[in-house]
Image (tube, rainbow, N blue to C red):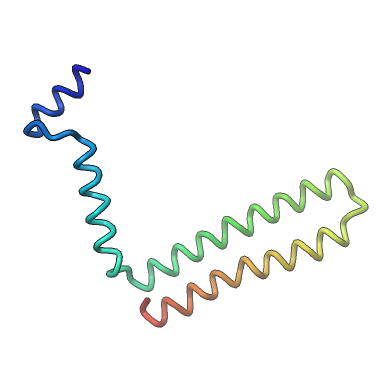
Length: 98
């Protein structure tokens, strides 16, 4: 409790969670200034994480049951293509400036 009281004294008796709310509100109001490069970066990072997780689960599934290789490979390639489509949509939006 002593730390909270010290913080309130330093911030003119304002609780620190109000400062966090103000920071989040400012970030949300400036969300319309997101550039295309940020959109592309988020889409590319999300797609890369998704493809990595799909590949890891494919290797794990084939390691547990090697006989399922053809089925797992087909489904894995399809889902990797769908995850890559998200990065392509991000590229399209980046060129449109959204």
